[in-house]
Image (tube, rainbow over all chains, first blue to last red; front, side):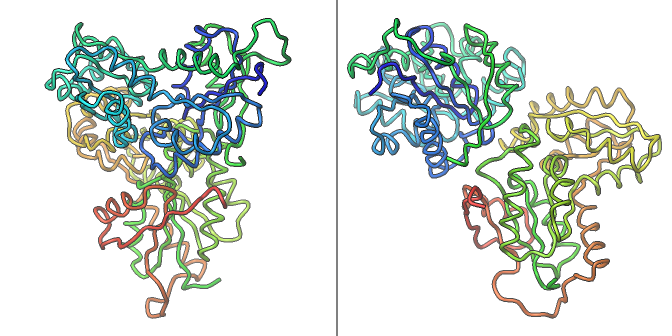
Length: 272
Length: 272
């Protein structure tokens, strides 16, 4: 395995850039190949079978870029596909769910944890399953929030409508007295201030992106494939690919990543 | 051309069933093969290039079912792809946009027409272009309403949040004193009562599904390929195919179509 090879990161769209950003911050020596499936997003409302098929195509594409490890930066794809594609792969794959689950368990005092995510992530029950495996006495309460992604994409981050919808979605979790809430979709950290206000100051909000970058660093170290910061490489350090709307992606990515994104290449993911 | 062959109808998902329903009502002798691209929906926020590629795949699939004509029952696909795929096809293709545009022009008294639709449909400017071709002095005002589809899919058809969002979207069109409003997305007729209340009783709401069925009947008659109601056929009169979540589609289709839908078959549209 080439230690200087890049890490592959993928998501259904732009949300996984929050994970890529954490990797850039925490492991700045690593190179990244990012893929966003903008032609077929969102994944959250689609079936397990379809999300597994899409994930396999993306992994085949990332392998053509000689990645040494892959991060599934999409909660739905992590929930539905990680176990299946891990079993098929000879390079390490990690998802955002494990990291988020571990952090939530480390944070809770009263053993009552809330999960919010897409219909796919919540319907899969994956967070509950992973948490129960780590700590069987934990109480997990899940709620899907299908309008959060469209509200974020409409730019209504601080808006009375978003407040109203969030109040409705979260009321059931507040009623369960959770002391920890996992933001189980990569778009949700953008609603952090609204979620914070509704849940109150005493509830810990867990963003799996942060812990995923830590898990990746530990994985690269334990497998001896962490990149040597001094070694040379050709081409861009960070490469971006999407299945649609490359320019729109470039401008969004530039707005949330630390450095400017010069270009994004569009590919036909269905050919892989 | 086999007069007894079915008509193909497609959409990005379930919305086009409102068009299929009108065809069933107005031309009950015709057989229908419906395809909903539920694995890749929505189309409204995707690029022209991608929507054209998806439309070509679907047309290739429908041709394997020996359809004699195809109705693009999706405003975005009609806006982006109809002209291109018509030029490539030896069977007749029609879309929902022409029918909607013609009805709006016939209905307006003050020559001021509003269009609401997805980002793709509105961004394409197709309604304005078609209307101006029919009547150059018409004034057309367009507004994309990206939250309407998710609100409908969340079931918030009669809800204060939907009222608030609709008020914001429509205020610009009210300010233009339109007397006719085209519901340029197949989901929007489900918000008819909200739209009616906000626009007022004097504004005509145009649902292109209705006029599209009339256009199809005229087309089949003029080309001499209208089905003989007495002729025999094998298999189901109405066939349904999707690219994901067949059972969910079946139950939704049963709830809005006049007869029960027995089954929906899932296919891999990317193979076409």
